[in-house]
Length: 209
Image (cartoon, rainbow, N blue to C red; front, side):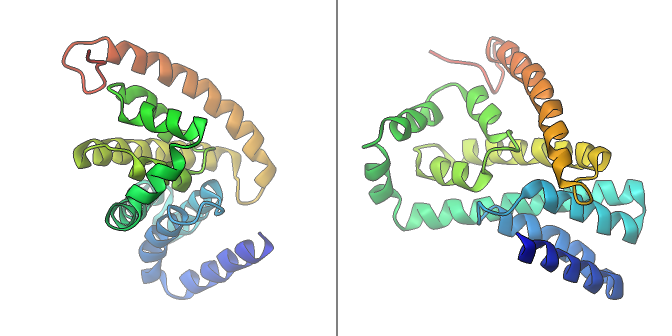
């Protein structure tokens, strides 16, 4: 991780000398996080918020961070989705289904209830790339994948931007603990709301028999 933080500092210096790179890097970092599960999304979003805010202003920086980070993360996940679907999807599905939890996850994703999958994908403390690998293996339509992935990415990025700015994660990484507490409070409210939507007739998240 020391290498990662040093890399971010080098990118900060590069952006300070070449402001036009800020939007490209702001999109690129979440893109690679969606591919590699070991990269910390919270730190990346905090970095984007910092450099884009310095380049364009606080409000503009927050808006750009949400837009660019969501697009970059979504495109990274979509790339993995298509790569898995056109290569080794069938092989890995057979492997995953041999394990109890893998089989349970695929059944949940392929089921009628969309709110559970969205709640799972919207958790910023779960490795989004790993969840995306599992979702890519499941038998879900492209429309369902795009909607669930796009909405969950937007939710996570907005959450990271506002709480990341409050807790200053890049300067104080241990503040992620307080961020987690705030997240689980918000998650509880979100799950209750989704439960009401799944009972509403005509809702995208409606549980159908």
